[in-house]
Image (tube, rainbow, N blue to C red; front, side, top):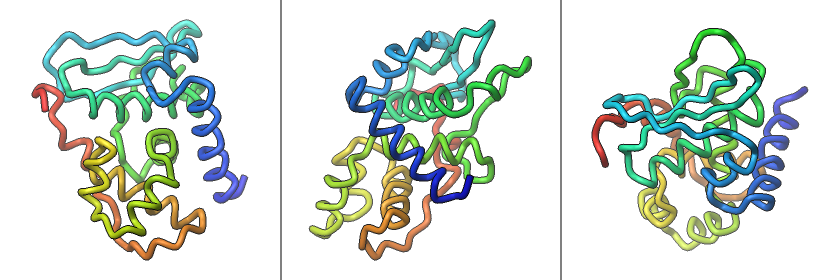
Length: 180
């Protein structure tokens, strides 16, 4: 499968799931049959997707704020939809959110941006001259997620003129032991 068809598949699936379950990724995970388990311990880990005995689970840090949880749930939803076979491995795998060197992480990140951020709304704000931080604040997402979305929109043919690359390690800098 070529790269463009992979990107298109991620985009189309994000739209399909959002139409089916609405804009809340937590509800979408539950609607897709994923069991959500809060981690009631102090940890830097934000979330993890795992299949155990053919049952999908998302373990998530319930001490971070709602905006971070939304991003984590959308990211893990991407893993559920596209990486279920990988999550069946016997050992637990800690995903690094918004890490660009792993293909599965890149796909989950792209899915997350398309699920959480409507490109028409983002496009209107970008064309009106809003900055990256202003747009991110309006959508309650990290600025790097907004940059991810704008990069994907440019790939899709939107004329935005943005050239900034996201900090691909920004999610790893969020300490799950502290409520934001």
